[in-house]
Length: 240
Ligand SMILES: C[S@@+](CC[C@H](N)C(=O)[O-])C[C@H]1O[C@@H](n2cnc3c(N)ncnc32)[C@H](O)[C@@H]1O
Image (cartoon, rainbow, N blue to C red):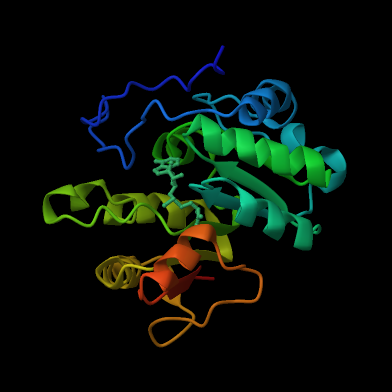
């Protein structure tokens, strides 16, 4: 039996609060390993979506209360998320992903690498940020290679839009950072424009930033590079 899907409809229409979903849930194949790691890992490293603010101490434990908290939106199969968490043990990471195969793979990474600083929520990140993340509680936000929705009529589905970026900026602590990356030039331009227009944020570079060493090359990036796309990193900090 497949793992229980998240409590979301497959509809790509507006949600009750009228935000347009940035994803379409498809009945993708879940491998036996993904299913097993999902079933075994969710009770341990999964955090159920709830309409109340997350208590970081309950998630990561009281000894980690000083550890910077970093949110990653759209982890995909989780290799990058896990690699970053493994290489930066001083930080705590919360990954958000909607697709069961990806969450299963991420949980496999957590289990096999023995990570204690990475947990996951399987739900729409827009709702998680809105309902669960307290203002000024994050040191960083990663949005790596979000779905590009390349066709003009689909672009309203893109995650990096003014209202969501404002919600994200509010969740950052002063000097906290948001780091977006994409291999679609017009999405990179949109990211730069939207983040520049957000009054709570300042660009750390004059426009695009060099890829920081903490961000490994992702699967989607590798694919994009193979297709001859460029890659753009956009990094802003919250005003002090
Ligand atoms: C193109 S993939 C990139 C995955 C990964 N970041 C990488 O670079 O390899 C985008 C991912 O974002 C997820 N996603 C899209 N919208 C989301 C949302 N609103 N909440 C959570 N995950 C979302 C998709 O399911 C997909 O796995």
